[in-house]
Image (cartoon, rainbow, N blue to C red; front, top):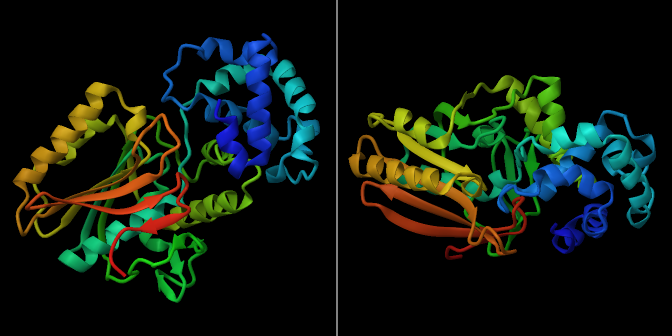
Length: 340
């Protein structure tokens, strides 16, 4: 259940997942909650869904004993002492948790914009055209507002200095060029289960998906939700394949169409992944100088291994592909692969 991996970045979740794995083997309360999901795909992020379900109860104020260990709820007790309260929560809320674990992973991670912006600005410098943004797996559409965030790397910076979302200390030297003029003409995405940034219930779902002892991520999420209130974006309730077939039907004249996504492909079926690939490449072949297109993605090189994620970009006409950066899953650390 990824306990060893989490332990490096989340002492609380790392310890709890290792204890939960032992409890599953012993047929304890963790197994009671997870048994209905035992046949879920290995790529469905079951461990993260499990932890998000419990975190949701904590944020709702339903588990005060466990909240004492959760920094997101003001707790400060040692993480290695949390298991007894966690286990009691699993016993007392088993039926509710079984239902919550069934919810899909909804980590609308704003930090990933720090990796993706390298590609967006590369496009801005290269083509100097208004953007038509199309995001797959957009969740609440927070990364559709990437141009309203601030990015800082050493003495380099891009974006509104007054933005409440500031992404700093994420880039390893040599730092990427943070330059380029951006105008976004359209923001649109799709998701099988889109969330509304203005809905208290949906905001809770997003906050619960953040690891409870990673307060910077939680603050960035909350700041991005405030940006979303004033920057419109459309997120359609749709799967990636059918939606792309609709929105890529005709080239958009005098706009740069950018299809992008971050940590999405693992949640698609093999057939849908193939459909996404084919639809994007078909649309790319129809691209022209007046209606160019790009495919920008941040995805792991191996979904089942702890490998760095890669930022890659294909531009049409031409179909030239570039590997721009390596990144951690939450947009830190980021290693630019260009020339200094």
